Length: 493
Ligand code: PNW
View 1 (cartoon, rainbow, N blue to C red):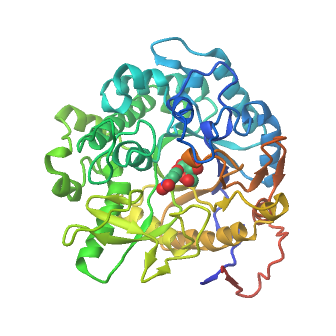
View 2: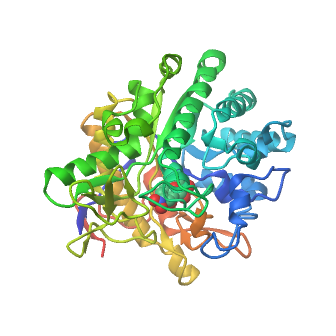
View 3: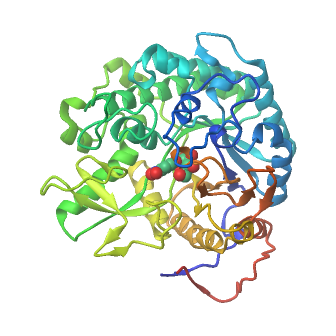
């Protein structure tokens, strides 16, 4: 695998946002600060759910160490930081009880510290975590009651933080948490939809789409509030983040080409089509028919609110296989819409493997996906809200800190972002996932995505080689010796 790899900061506009990203549950630590129980707090404590038997009670203890973390972030030269607000830290029981003042104070301090360092806060309202109360009262996303709760939460956040936060996103990766929570049952609330999964608790072919429908309307309700009550005075922008893989047809057939298209639609169009184009994609309607809800006229009116920008999390490309013309074994993690995806063709991987079993290094995929989103949504401004490389948490600290593969990953992906921009794509920012090694959901601490190493015994932070490289790239003083005058080729084994 060979790729052209030189790239410089000045090939991107001056006001381009370059940052790193985290999420509340993965870094903060849940035990401190009067946080209410979230769905993930409960889920992680069910024996057998997390690969290494761990939980996120302490995680990176970012709750206590955020000031040092922001110093570190500042030293890297980033101009933005993407993080999320833990809903149950702010509203321990949703709208059914009061606001937690310690939670508001924590995020106020975090935001103030960032702003003081000239780092733009880029804030996610929902990054997989909700107050457990909402799960127990009305099964969260399966009930339209969640719309009122989410809109209330959003309004509390706009009121408390909107004077300093200029970039808001409502949801992180609805496609991921609906797939894992309602299609294959691997994440909370462990619901399944055949043929993609079977759950002891019972299966439903409609639940993923009901949950998605309520989520889309929650997005629209929160955006409506921002537009009507806050945007003019606060001058910020609001969007949503999706997480599309790029899909290549497994075989050179119209069936696999159409499978690749259906998988893209399920990653992206399921949410962005209603939000930006006003209704579900016809490809989804064709496959799902009456399982897919309809928007009422009133709901369609609300959907006219749209977004100011699209966030794209991108990690991998996969091969797509059609499961309509001939039945196939569905990959539980990457099957939907009668299509299945994997990283292998004729025994060969699509790109070098990473610590994540379904993520491969395929740099050109990021340009493909940017151009796809650009063309489908009329070049709505885009931010790459996550992109990154995972190591398995094995080996010595020295080995993990000397993360040359992650350096190569960034050196190879960034030129393709730049290339999409040269083809006219309105990309306005890039966030490396992640700032810190952290709690990787059901994989616990078995993966390390950080550009900064975290020692989970002492909580000490050590910038990895990739952090040094990113800093060099951002400040124009590359530390990792690179010959920029000549095209150099890097071999990712
Ligand atoms: C995203 N998968 O989630 C999230 O936004 C992050 O919280 C997470 O740490 C990051 O990607 C890396 O995984 C995903 O298994 C988690 O397909 C798992 C998958 C995809 C996305």
